[in-house]
Length: 50
Image 1: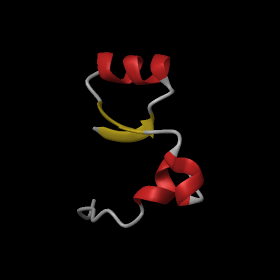
Image 2: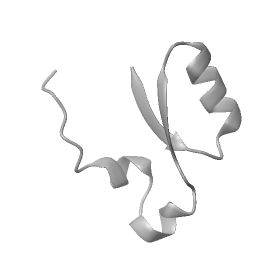
Image 3: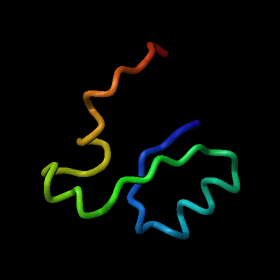
Image 4: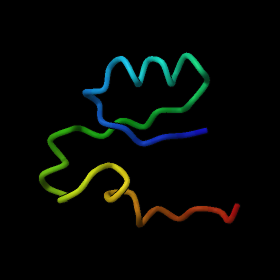
């Protein structure tokens, strides 16, 4: 799988990678610019139907 996380989540990101998850890191400073978290900032991403 793939996730979008903050780059400051060093431990969580490392654990996710150890379990084969592709981690896309977002700079934490972008939060204030986007007025939301990683999920809110990624809503425009096109996703395939499940």
